[in-house]
Every structure is written in structure tokens, then in C-alpha cells.
Picture 1: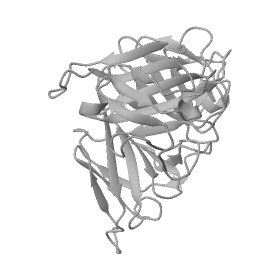
Picture 2 (picture 1 turned 90 degrees about the vertical axis):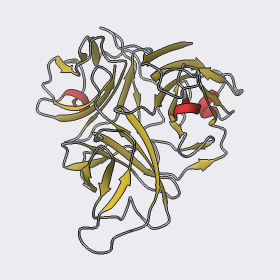
Picture 3 (picture 1 turned 90 degrees about the horizontal axis):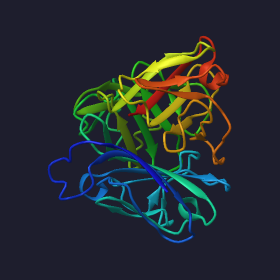
Length: 325
């Protein structure tokens, strides 16, 4: 078992809980419920748990958060509605979480990666809302409040009550991507203004504000030496991506925006080294892919290598990323 985490001074009211803002925790499946201790206070502060089997089985990604409550999971590789009572994450604890017996989180013989994001001002927030189709005439604006404290730079929204795509907004990109899909960012932009207290949904409301449907949103910000939402242009040569960090990136998510390309995830516990760098794909059930050298360590962020495919480093290609120090 292995754990990597970003620590920050415990927030007021932690009540003795863990003080990690982010954690990557690797563990082995047992076929039984497990308590994962990763020093993240989910019970007191709230946040998101994201789990994926590394293999050998091909399981769905499992995402559970404190805004929706325990044992309610969504899967980034499908458009399916939330599944309730499926034995995913059954408890959010003051220093981690407890899994159920679902094979996707604890199958015997499989290895698992978990990424836990704690709600933290300036870094990450989780917001649930109910669609109301609030305005029927231009400019069709719906305002959603949040507690991020700064304007979000990446917003991921999923309808939980019904089938629907995972819509991904990134500041500065004029279209939206779909987290379950490898296609280019072509979906019409429906995020309007973003501020330190709210973000707006504008026309069309077709996907993200249907009356009576329930939604979950994950908000990420750039925070000095903690997290970075950004973009880069491919060169087909070794490309240094400066995130403003001092000790390199521990978690990296990358997606090509101008053409087809999967959503790649690396983390330092599975390896961001000058050599073999195992990756998982957000939009796929596939097991971890090893024996690749697509990313290298860089003290200020990460390096995309010349051996990376066009999905990561085509000359002139455009890419977005989320990195955690």
C-alpha cells in the first residue's frame, strides 16, 4: 500500500481530523470492505473520492462525494445516472473513507488507485444543485453558488438523476469537453461568468438545468504551489509544463482539446519518473497501461515527452490539464 498527499495546515473545525488537502492512495483489493486511512478529513470538511482498479480487471471508475452522501456513485466512463446502494464508498471518515464490497473498489486480486480531494477554499469545492429551467427568455442565466473563494478554472458537471454527459468547462476554452468521451472539445459553451462566489449557466439549458433533475459539480482552481489548471500547445519534442510548483506534480490529468484524445491520469505513487509511467484513462474501464514514457518529472510541474502520442503532444495540438503538487 502506498500513499502520497499534499498537506496544508488543518482548517478551523477539523476536530482532530486529517489535514491533507489531496491524497493518492494505492491499495490491494480483498473482496471485503476496507477502511482507507489517507489523512484527508472528509467527515469534517467534505470532498470527493475517486477510485479506479489498476487491473487486471476492467472496472468502471467510481466517484463518490460528501455533497451527495455515501454509497451513491457515478462513473466517469459512462453517461449513466447515479447508482445508489451499490457498495462503493460507504462512509466518509475524519482521516479517509470506507469502501463497500463492490468489485470496482475492492475486487480480490486487483490493485486500486484512489484520489481524494478535500474541499478547500482556493483549491477545490463540490456543489450539488437541482435544475429549475429558471429563465425562459434571453439571456437564459442560472446562477449556482459555491464556496471556492476564487473563480473556478475547471468545472465538471454531471446529471446524477438521469443519463447525461459529464460536461467539462476550462477557463479560456470556448467550447466544452465530455469526460466520458475521447472527442475534441466541441460541445457548446454553457458556462457564463465565473466569480469567487458563483458561476452561471447560460443557454442552452438542455443538459445542465433540466427542471427537477439533480446535478453534481466539481470545481477546481489554480492555487500557488498546490494546484494548477492550465493549457499547453504540443511540440512533438520534450515539452516542459510549468505549474509554479517547487517539488513537482503528484497528480496530472491531460486531455487534447482540438482533436481526438483520451483523458489521461498519472500520479506520483504509481510513477512520474524518467522512465516507466503507468497511466489510467478517465473515459475507459481499461486496466492501467504500463511500460510507457509519456511524462517525466519536473520540479515546477511535469514534462510531456517526445515519445508521447498525438493525444498528448502533437505539434500544434492544444491540450488542457489539471495538476496537483
